[in-house]
Length: 458
Ligand code: AMP
Ligand code: SF4
Image (cartoon, rainbow, N blue to C red; front, side, top):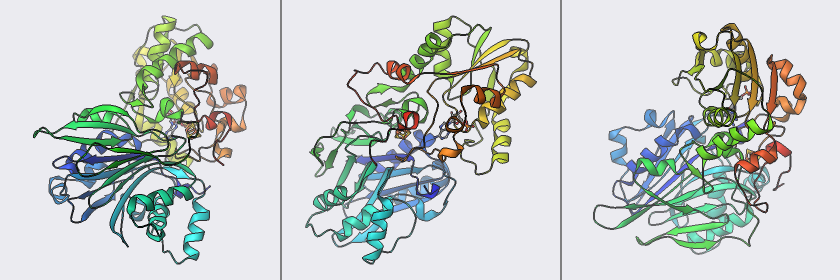
């Protein structure tokens, strides 16, 4: 799998709101954790679509002046995740195009698994691609469809793609929000009460976007649902395919989503805390204190501490002004970045037996580095507890994971990993424990392929 084809990110769509681009901007700001490589917004005022996008954080790309240029009551926006591959402006979104029916712009979170076949087919028909993203494929399929109206052309395109997608399309007068039939990636719907008494609507990857703009969470966009926003009305709902059994991404709860978001109908914070409680039940150990790897392990560590009655301490402090370490292409740079980011408080942990909670081990670099930092700071024992099962398989549906041979749990057993990270003990939450934390009905399914290797779409 080519790293550059990956497409993790945040999407937002704002409909029927004054200064929609400003609301999209705030929403993207609150979802910055889902992507830091590039950011962009398209807006429309019934006449034409204007797009501004660039590499960098939301606050690097936008300012008062360029946001003022994004006029109109409809806007869509996107944050792109950093990957090890292409890092080009052509891979920033939204993707805008002029085509047979006028103007269109699109934002996408997810990954198509038949992207290469579609790309080859489109190139053979004469299409020219600017970047490497799956998202451009939607534009070409829509442009080449022979259907008379945009809605039907989008449906036509969706029949041909396979994979994970939460999409928002903007035309000059309408907005369409779509979730793939398995509901792999999140997308929720909110309402905004405008000053003049009218209602606006917003769709976003995570509900934390709604909090900042005073939108009220209504519900998730359903798996396989298209919401059509037009003529200032509440959205019309249309199912895009026959019913499939939804498989939303369980990893959103483990790591990707913000804890103050509601994802797939559940508060992420509560789920993560419950994961820590389950972990205490499954993998108890005697120790003097529970410390989280900030920020990803905080909620689970609180749960572990409360259930075990072992005191919680912030034994490691995180410097928030350094990007995430996972994204760096070479091992040595990654190691330096861990040190830049995390600093133990020696006075707290010296001579103590520690339970260290993190959400996941991917390559093992972070854990090994953390264990070393804690030992150097005088910790007596270090017991790593991970609030998810071993990550054994890569994700093909839009979460950035390395190739299988780089996943430490695909190469080593528990004992070997424990030795590699130099901990006194290591234990993971079971898949059953993870599902218990979600308090799901036995029939409720999730995609958990990175933990069990069962891919629902192939
Ligand atoms: P590693 O050093 O590769 O084992 O990285 C593990 C760390 O990366 C954990 O602390 C996780 O919080 C974090 N992590 C897990 N999944 C991802 C992801 N998809 N993108 C970025 N970071 C991640
Ligand atoms: Fe989520 Fe893992 Fe499935 Fe990817 S493979 S969609 S990260 S659960």
